[in-house]
Structure formats: structure tokens, C-alpha cells
Image 1 (cartoon, rainbow, N blue to C red):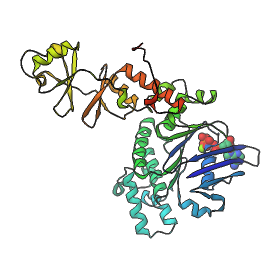
Image 2: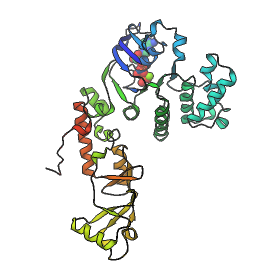
Image 3: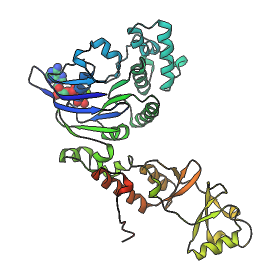
Image 4: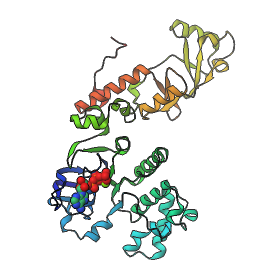
Length: 384
Ligand SMILES: Nc1ncnc2c1ncn2[C@@H]1O[C@H](COP(=O)(O)OP(=O)(O)OP(=O)(O)O)[C@@H](O)[C@H]1O
Ligand SMILES: [Mg+2]
């Protein structure tokens, strides 16, 4: 959808902002550009909508060399969230959001209706916030308006220059989450600039790690964290990249252990005998549908009654597909040695610290080999 072919940008004073850049962003893909200040991220982005012209090389959008496309027409197809948001201070939030539709000649009522719809989409009540002015909004709200404005003309391509840069970490995380939810819906082709590796990893389908004017590595978050291509990338992603990897590695069914199980309606005495025979000291308790109810220790199981009378509720669970980091967090929060993994309400198995470590190791190897995690052979320390 966006293709850079040996693109360079040199300024008259001799600065090479971007040096021989080639990469491609697929349709519906979100690529993050990450790197230190001054490495050429904004320059890269502004060449896509021709706010900056390359010195050499060419850029294609949807197969078309953009040098031959009228810049105004080009920009209709490309939403742009600029660094520092850049709302017009003397226009209301609603009119700010309607800027592009108004520019391209939509009727005022239609442009405003669309703006209201988009404010709603980014979590701002248009009735409440539409009539306000930018200085009557918090930083996070202003950034939401910036995103709404960029989406207003429903462009297939979105350029976002540090869209969540100017807010505190908590609000930032919230905005990122909202944006990911929205992106899952609208599936734009997105180039997003950030200088924050955490944000790059969290949002990107793929990441371009910039050195001075050049891409040092262009790969999935898992691969960048697991197998940095150069010492520079390793340094940039940081010594805690293993920890960061937890947030991009998903729990898969094959990561799970199958613990002893008891049924809610099972008689307590026989259940205790059965579990003892299996050498178990506790069991996960499921209802008749196979949904998680809780757990029970076999000392708690007396001779009479049912397992359900003695079972305790279990709150340490995560959905399958959640990142390992979430499972780790839940383990710590509940001070538990394992967490249940559910598909909807259905119990799939448990994740233990050993299995978590194994899943992480497996995903590093899988990324290095370019295969899926299930294809990697792995002997855990516990097995050896
Ligand atoms: N008009 C200009 N003339 C000369 N050099 C320029 C000009 N505009 C930008 N540069 C230089 O080009 C390089 C890349 O700038 P760019 O704005 O792309 O960086 P960036 O990666 O977006 O940085 P930041 O994270 O600080 O926003 C910088 O060294 C900058 O000083
Ligand atoms: Mg910049």
C-alpha cells in the first residue's frame, strides 16, 4: 500500500535526513517508526503526503508513484495526525474535526455530522465536547481529537506522528488501547512515529527501528525484541527486552498444563480418593459445561456432600490469546502459582511459571527461525 524505493532526503545545508530507504507497508498493516530524535522519522512521514519532496528515489501509494499525483488529491486519501496535535485554537472541537471534509467540499451539515460520529468513535461525547475550544480540553482529549480529525474523510492511509506523545504514561496507555480497538475495526494502513520502543512494540504489526536516517531493522515486535539485527538495535530496545517480549507473546493452547480436575457435582469422598490416587493435592473445579468454577484442596474434601460445597472461587484467570505479561501480572496480583486460561468461560488449562518461561523461549527461537511457535522443539529445565 505504501512503498519506499531507495528514497533519500538531503537538505541544502548538507544534512541527510533520510538515506536510501526501502520498505513496504501492506494494506491494513500498522507499521511503527521508532528511533531517537532527529533520525528522520517525521521526514519519512511527510514525504508520503508530499509535504516534503525526496531528493531521490520514489514512493508509491496504492501502486501509484506519488510524484505524479496532485498533492491535494493525494492528501484526501491520507489522514495525518501531526506531532503536537496542532488543533486550530479559535475553532470548536467539532469544526476542528470537520476540517478535512469541509476542505474537500462536503456540505457543512454532512461534515459536522461526520465529525460528531468520529468524536464519538474516539470516546468524546460530541454534545459535550463538540462546542468547546481546544484549550478547554485535557492533553489526552486533544490527542483524541487529532486522531478523529485525521479519520474524518475516511482515508485508507493514516500517518500519525507521535499521536500519543504529549500525555502522561497512564493516559497514553489508555489512548493506545482505544486506538488498537478502533484500528481492529477500521483497518487503515498506518505509519505511526514514536520515539518510545514500548509504544512501537505495543502498536506495531511491524516495527522499523531507525538509526541515523536509515532503517536498522524492519520486523515484527517479537523478532526485534528476540533477535535484534545489530548491536545498535539491541542497545535501543534495551536490556529488559525479555521483559518487553512478555507483552507481545500470546498465550497459546499448547503452552498449557492440564492439572487434576474435579466436577462441581461430583461426590466429595470419591473425588478425594480419586485425586489422592492420582497423587494430586488440589484440583481445578469445573461445572458440567466445562466452565471454570474454582479450585479445591483435597484436605477440604470431607466424606459427605459434593465438590461444589467445598470449592473456592478462582479469580486468577486470563483469556487464551492474552499476552504472557498479563498472565504474569495476574499471577503476582493473586499470589498464585498458576493461572487458569479460558476460551470464553471454557477452561483450557493452566499456565505455570515454568510453562510461561518455556513459551517465551519458544517464541524467541521461532522468531529467529521464522516459523510458528508450535514448530519449535524445546526441552524445558524441568524435563531435563
Ligand atoms: N529544513 C531543514 N533543513 C535542514 N535540516 C533539516 C530540516 N528539517 C529537518 N532537518 C534535519 O533532518 C533530520 C531529521 O529530522 P526529522 O524531523 O525527520 O527527525 P525526527 O526523527 O522526526 O525527530 P524527532 O523525534 O525529534 O521529531 C534532523 O537532523 C533535522 O535537524
Ligand atoms: Mg519528528
